[in-house]
Image 1 (cartoon, rainbow, N blue to C red):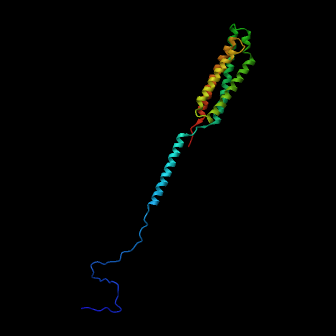
Image 2: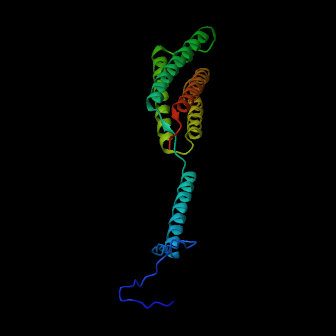
Image 3: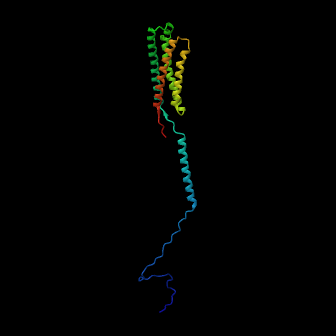
Length: 207
């Protein structure tokens, strides 16, 4: 039987309870924002830039390694101790030579070269030389790439000059040789102690 629609009949689709499947309208969602290639390229460029900056920093650190720090207190206390040792070396050396000259026929001129005044001056010069070597070590450590090598050369050449100079003076040959030997021992003592102190006063650098 066919029924005519009435003015109050619903126009939307109705569902009956005896339907096998109850169909509900699917929720509609806004389309997700599509990521264009611009953001991806921007992030990629930013990451490459940061990577390049890190590589540049590593290369700079390798080309310019951090310089070891200096413990100036330890260096100068060691320098004062070295000065005391050098002065004592000079004192002991002059005493030994004076005893030898008492029994060796070297003459009064050679014996006079090791008088009390001259022995005191030699001890004073030895102490001053040790302090000067400490100052040179301090300067080299803070300013040169390989300070201990330069320091060794400077002390070695200075010691050689101190050994040769007495032989060129007007003192008797026996006294000149004795002074050269004492200067050599003083130079060796100063060189070994100052270089050892400089090595101990250098601390590894922290980045």
